[in-house]
Length: 343
Ligand code: NAD
Ligand code: 89V
Image (cartoon, rainbow, N blue to C red):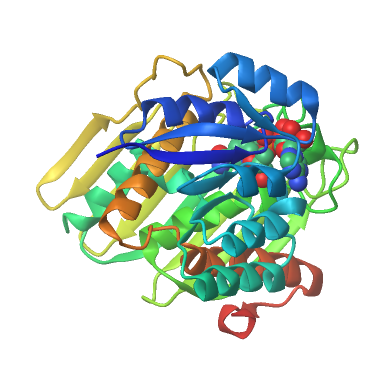
């Protein structure tokens, strides 16, 4: 089967990972790229040998014969670009965070539904192999029924050097990073009924919150704590590892720093190294994230080929994005937020 042809919009910091991954994906390749910044267009075009380059996304979609679009711009342009793809009846991947508001995100899902095209949010953290290993361990039944989880991301890594816009937004850690960790909580323990949140800003040089602590009630009856911080200096910097604790009625799972997975059940305890592979184009410490970019992009192509919905479809990701909104609402009011009221 011939490769599907993709057009990538947004040639910035993270798109380089997506371009590397598209080179490795079986069944699709990027044939045209777009960025309104000529320098980024040149850098990425030259690095990946893409001759068909556009400053305007509308022009690219009108001129090229594409099978899907990959939107890798920052959040402010997501709605317009996804709606543009839908208007051209093109399946579309959109980077997280889904949109500036839940209303925008809902409109994007509707636009793609009305056009009859799939929409996937590039929510890649659940695709990291250590997180997949935790899910697989839960699914074996070795720990019984989970009743508690802690999904934790604490770091003092300087994310602002690669992504300077992160220092400027009124919303920071929940919208940019917490969104991934909340999605992992949903992936491991199921959908959420109520969320309670507390936030603070420790770093005086940024505009948004850099610490968030969230308590989640899951539909299953399990309770989890999702805690995120970019103000936590540790002896060994864990960025960008997500640490996981799951307690079940028959045992426990721990994903500890250094990608060590310990499962303790009725038969005893065993620890496995679940380190992600270092792909040829990847670099530490980002390799954990980079591997998941390849996995989610391959998942998208496999879903397009088989006609199934991607796991992080727009409709699914509304439920993760609602947790982000609930966290900001709950942090502002000090009150628990019923997630269903937002959807
Ligand atoms: P960036 O600012 O480095 O790159 C964005 C690029 O998009 C810029 O080059 C900009 O000129 C271009 N652009 C913006 N609007 C455009 C438009 N309408 N048409 C054409 N080009 C346009 O940002 P980044 O750090 O690469 O982040 C991009 C997205 O990726 C963000 O949504 C971010 O949250 C997300 N991200 C995801 C992960 C992950 O693991 N999933 C990691 C980092 C960043
Ligand atoms: O994954 C992300 O969205 C990145 C980072 C890990 C730095 O938060 O922005």
